[in-house]
Image 1 (cartoon, one colour):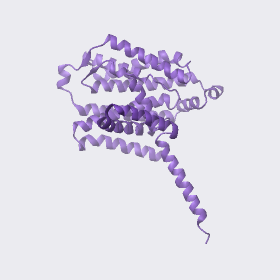
Image 2 (cartoon, rainbow, N blue to C red):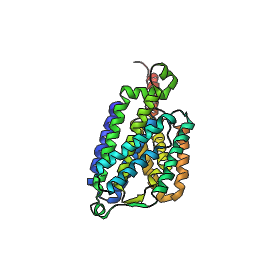
Image 3 (spheres, one colour):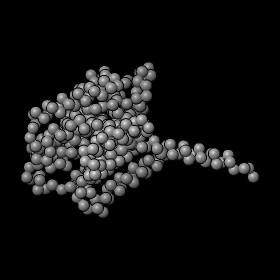
Length: 316
């Protein structure tokens, strides 16, 4: 089963690497870029929410800080790579500063607390940077879509690889122990706060990288836009739809989310938000393991059917 997942992910990466060469429409490349961005965001959120069990509604803060720092440095002449790294490190610094106080809150209070912190940043950035961020003429003339596509593909591969290594490491096992039963983990010598902070730092770093990639991709946008709470809600929705606490779940959730969102926006307009809300409730109530859990249920059903058929066959 594990090998099948790895093969599927490798196959998907190869397909994504070759698609722009086969389908050369800019609209298709833009759609693929959005999918990759959402894969990165969903996988980043899953490190904290899926493996450690901490439901954050404030990841838009890390996404926005990564985007803000990257954009400001880049348009002032700093190379894009150090600009993105500075943005992601700023996101990590903010995460670690708020982490210890925030983790004193439990359950829904933690979710509301992180949402409140993100909204404070959202309003602050909106007041400090009310103008549109547009690329300088020099960067606008040199703008190309493919380098941005492959940059996002590289980031997606990186975060998926890190998630895989993390899950199979001692630290990852500690995170999952905290998720399953925090008090029991503490009694066995697993520091809940330490593992939560590690998960938060790694999650914030890659969310900040995604923000930097967002700043690199867009020609113009309002500085406040990446701080919007809908980014946090989208991350949570994708992970729950795909399957939290898994490697492949956020990938499937992101692809499904973007494809369905594009279809609904084109066909039902603003009513797509209602449909997504209903879909999220259905998944939480009737498919708590997400789409990936369907495979396990299907295997069990087939196994039961095979055993039942074997009992019906008379002995020779």
